[in-house]
Every structure is written in C-alpha cells, then in structure tokens.
Image (cartoon, rainbow, N blue to C red; front, side, top):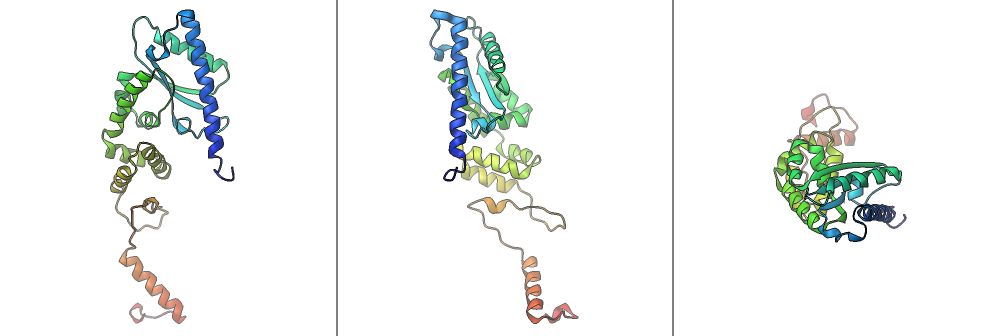
Length: 239
C-alpha cells in the first residue's frame, strides 16, 4: 500500500475474481457439451468487465459489473449457456450486475442511454471467444468515435468532476488522452464571475494555461495597495 497506494492490491483482487468467472464459464461449457466440447474460441460468447472492475480497480465487496456479448448461432444454444452461467454466479454468492447484448446491438444500445455507453467504453476482456472480443472491440471503437463532443457535453451535465476524471481515465487506456482533453476544454462554458462556488477544472490538464482576468488582477492590485498602506482610501482612484 505504501508504494502503490493500494493499486497493486486492487489489481490482484480483480485478477482473482477474473479466475472465478473463467472457471465458472468452463464448468458451464462442460455441462453443456461434455466430452464433445468445441474450442472455446468457436463458441460465440465473450464475457467482459465493466466499471471499476473493467479498470482493474475493484474494491472488496464491490458489485461485479459484467457485459456478455454473443452471437445467436444455431446449434450453440448461446442464450441458454449465458442464462446458466448467470445462475451459477448468483448461486455462488457473487454480487453481480450484468448486461447481455448481441454484438450487432451494441451501437444501438449506446445511442439510447448515455449511462450504458459510458459503461461499454470501459469494457475489458475476461474470457470467451477471442473472435467475439475482436468484433466487440470493433463496435466499441466505433462507439468511442461517434459524436464525441455531444457525449462529453451530456456527461458534463451529470457530474462535472467525476465525469471528467472518468473520461480522462478511459482516454488514457485508449491512447486518446490529448484529443479527449482538447474536446473537454472546448465543451466547457466561458468563465464567469459568480457569488456561488463554481470550481474550475481546466487546471487539471497538462496542456492548459489559465490566465487570470485583468478585472480580477486589478482588484487584487487595489487590495494589495490598501493592505500595504494600512489605510482605507475615501476615493478608490487615490489607490
């Protein structure tokens, strides 16, 4: 914990949970196919991790958010396999949150709900068909590139701080950090003066410079001169 601030532990914990899900999936395939089990890569199902689980930041006792992507091909009974896998995971006592989608439906689902889209962007491979994972990644890459600026604006309406942090984390993993930072900055409203607390998050970007308004600089200068002289002027022009 002293060196990695707990990150190493969270990664190890996440990998341990991965191994449980991988074992459960193997057990279900053995139940369905017995000694005639085809290669797992040919079964059109892939199991992915979402949220903190997808980021390998899973805390102890946290819910497991997974997304199962499949293709409905005759002869494989994919929907029955998925249903039995979920029953096994629930019966084992895991706190499971799940989404199940056909690969062709991913883009459509991402357009209907911004929460779903956000979760999908953090998907990480756990087990299943590598070919299905390739097809899933292809859809997710399209989702990432589709209407990026509108997506960021919509997320900013929810929770500015946590949303920006989450988007930046996703951008780093996708090697899009600089491009996404520029889009986030462009999507922010022009600075304004207000008596209410309005945090400015632009300072969190490595390539962003904040220039203090001349109006504010002048008021700071006036205050500094007053404090230096120790006298409150009758006319502000005297300062």
